[in-house]
Image 1 (cartoon, rainbow over the protein chains, first blue to last red):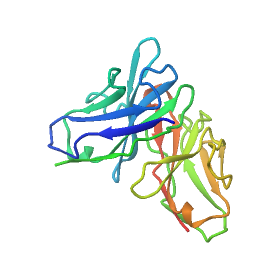
Image 2: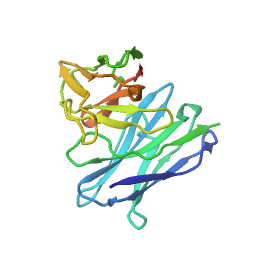
Image 3: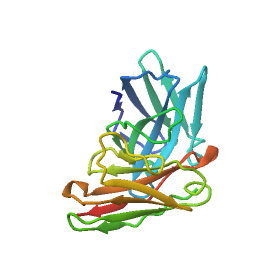
Image 4: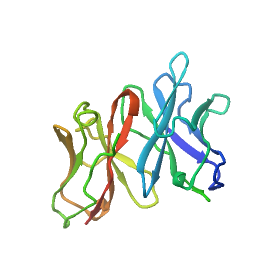
Length: 121
Length: 110
């Protein structure tokens, strides 16, 4: 079964860049039948889809308009993981960040990572 | 793109049935049969209980069922049990600009 393990800092200073990593077991980041996502959750913004990366003969990325100018999602095939970079952080970016997978042609997220609480302060 | 609208809280007694609503628009819920529902217990990641409006993943109790009418989706939990007490979020595909939108969440109290 697919499992996702997140890592990264819990505290980041305003204006700096957040980098989180999601390690994959039971699947491949290069799979032609999976899509890899980042989602965040905060009391003020609720659940918010941030973006995705996937491989279909080449790499593709899509990002939510709300963060498009500040976000990068990168696959790392050597470590079978993918990362989130979010720059120009403000306190509004304080949230629990999750990585999640969905199967190609599907639309629901399963599984999810364990979540990482990131505080911008 | 606005979040989908859910009631903040719904409560019921053990054994009862409750229905949670999820109001969207013709750009998301009304345009795609790609609504999913997630159950989230405190401190845990969300877990899918319904996908594609009415489908139930293997391992999810058949007490959970989903439906949709127009721009509003619904989740019904029948035979309410203490373990069903959690937050519930709906989600819908919203096209190739916004991709995915989530609901505001409903706290279910048993």
